[in-house]
Amino acid sequence: MSYKKWFDAHANKHAKIMEKLKDKTDDEVIAYFDFENMKVQEKEFCPLYEQEKKCHDMKALNCYLCACPNFRFDDEGMEIIEDKTLFSICSIESKFGSQFKGEGYIHQNCSGCFVPHKVSYIKKHFNRDWRVIMKDVEVKK
View (cartoon, one colour):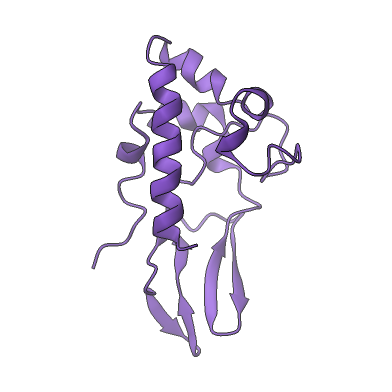
């Protein structure tokens, strides 16, 4: 699945949940997206919920910003580096991120980064429309 297809499908799932939460306060919405609640209430949101597995090894994982606003992708490739196509990067070059290099490709590996999954970060960047927060992730040429 391309980044763009995943991103659009995820945006739709996020919007559907937000419609159910339209009468909640911002703090209640953010609390709803806590991993422990989401794996019970919104099983279809993430395939890892069924396995009770977190994408990031942290105690208080919040899933509101599943997909990070600092992630950048281009399904056609951003540039060629050492005969490999770079498809994604971290715009803040988080010291907790890394790159996954394979045969002919490079992808950003965010599994070691916790930045967008902390409630304080989410509150700082919060918008009820997830796409507004994520407006810069797809690199437009």
